[in-house]
Length: 254
Image (tube, rainbow, N blue to C red; front, side):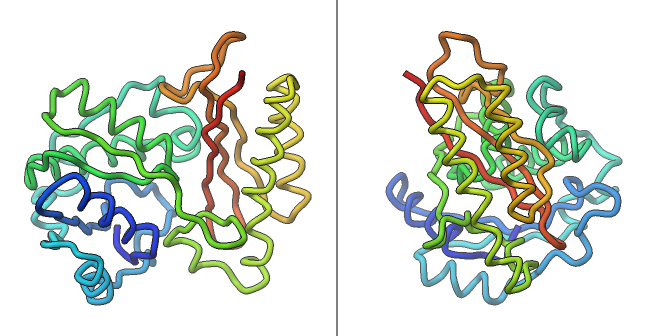
């Protein structure tokens, strides 16, 4: 959605490994913002984004206006509704309709750009799973490549919304990733997942953030993990000042 940072520009480098031409799309999508969310104040820095993409080696920037993407309004046309079991949990439970907006705009951009490969960051793991399911269910002839989260030196996942943080809040924010790291170690040592989730919420809150959820899921479909499931992901969202921060760690439980 623009306001690009080093994590976004890293996606360009990864895309370059998969194709001869790299196209970046920048579009602040009104369909994925709920009432009272930050659509109107979301930072729009198209000139700086264009320069960053140019320097990173992108060949084309596609930045359509809202009127071109939604001629009749963002909610009046045909919408793509992901399966509720995937889209209405975790962030979807706190942001109703969000992943419908994501799936709809990504489907439209796929049709307009017609890529062979599409590259997405893994920081929003749930979004990546929704897009993989979209491509599989609607038979888009596109390979989806997930790229590991790019982090600051202190562990904070890079995000456009980090710009909302005050200096004091920025100093607190790395506690989110630290709490997830501790949780992964606990699960791998055999602790009960329910206990780990509760303890991690308490650790996040004690650090000065306000956790919305912490959840351990199967990595490939976000289902509840069974005793024998080994490939897992722990996901969280937390509020800190004006920012809503998300993060996750994908790991293996032997």
